[in-house]
Image (cartoon, rainbow, N blue to C red; front, side, top):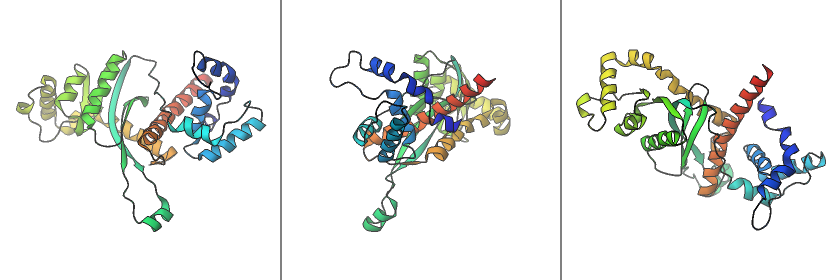
Length: 285
């Protein structure tokens, strides 16, 4: 199914209809290539450079799967700034976990290292919220520098509420043991780990956190972790592992906009691939 996902044949059948819809009421030069075709370019771009993508398009034209191919400039322009949206879940209640990771930037290679010396790498920070059981991405936040994980988590929880999605349970490690997080989750169940030095009398500003601290101190870590199913928090780490194993942890873009777009594309591709595989399996049952 991973291989089938890389070449969705049904995309070619809606070429003209999609272009007509995209160019409706558009000012200036009309689009020549539908968004679905550019999105599959973004998928291939994880392993193939822009010149290679042009070559693939030429082959598709010779096979009469597309009416005409795009060139290097069009591919660079359309793919470089494309920030795809993560599709919302089709259900209205989630058990959300949240965590962050980093992608490497400035992958210089041996030649540039030999000429210019060791180049210090920077990391792009990504924070995601996902439903821990189906591993469905809910929200993705990308920062070129700085950023607070608890603040990003509170923002993601508010976005879920705004989109009409009920938070049944929240999973997180010790970094999310803050008043801000517990105030944001409200009456939802909590599997957020409490810090070792937490005490009930220091929980001013969050009645909910004070309750969770007392519960944690009473049960102890092992009993609390078993009752709260804290181990499901690792589902987020598995998502990051899947993304990095399939499309790598290095970003090739040079500009901040390009880096953010490339990182978002990696996460979007994972979510689309999982959705494609799940739907394909259901259709065969």
